[in-house]
Length: 267
Image (cartoon, rainbow, N blue to C red):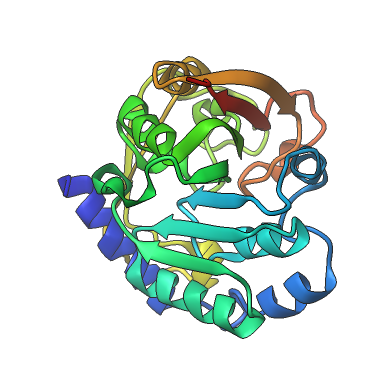
C-alpha cells in the first residue's frame, strides 16, 4: 500500500471513531421515505435518466454508504457494491444495508489494489464529492474503475470543480473574507497535508493523524478517463458549492461543482 494511502486510512478511521452522533443518523429514515436522498437536484436528474432498474451499481470511495443505499433503493437496482479504505466506515455501511434490507455490500479496500473479482461487474459507477482528491495518480485510479465496468457501462461523477483548488478556504492562512475569489494556489498541481481532522464528520476540532490529498485539473480527470476506455458523454458545470467549503460564493459566477458523465467503450 502506498505510504500516503496507508496514512489516510488511519486518519479516516480515526475521524470515524470520533464522529458526531448526528453523522449518519438520518440514513435509514431518509432512504426509506425520500426519493434519491443525499443527491443534489442536478445529480438526481442525471441518475434518473440512467438505467438503474435491475442494474449492478458500484461506488468508489463510498464513505458511510448513504449515497449507494439511496440509489439502489430509489433506482430499484439489483445490487450495489461500495468500496472505501476505512474499515469502520465500511462496517457501518454494511449494518445500514442490513437494517434497510437492501442488496448492498461494502468492502474495505485500497482501490489501487483491487483484485479481479469485480472485473466487468458494474452497469453503472458513481463517484461523488471528495473522492478523486485522495489519489495521486488518476490514470491509475480510472484504470481500476474501467476494469470493473461492463462494456457500455455508464459512469456519473459529481465532484467539486477543480477551479476551487486555487481558492483559500476559511481557516487557511491565505484566506481573506474580503477577497474570497482571489486565487492563491496552482490550478495544475498541489499536494496538501493536514492534521486538522474532518470537522464535517466530527463537528469538533482535534489534532488528527495526517491526511494527504491532491488537486487535479479538469484535463487530468478527463484524460484519466479517456486513456482507460471511458468516453466522456457529458459535462455540466455549476456555480454552487457541494463541498461545504465555498458556499459563500454560491451563484457568484465562479465554477464550484460539476457533473461528468461517461461510458465505457463497447468491444
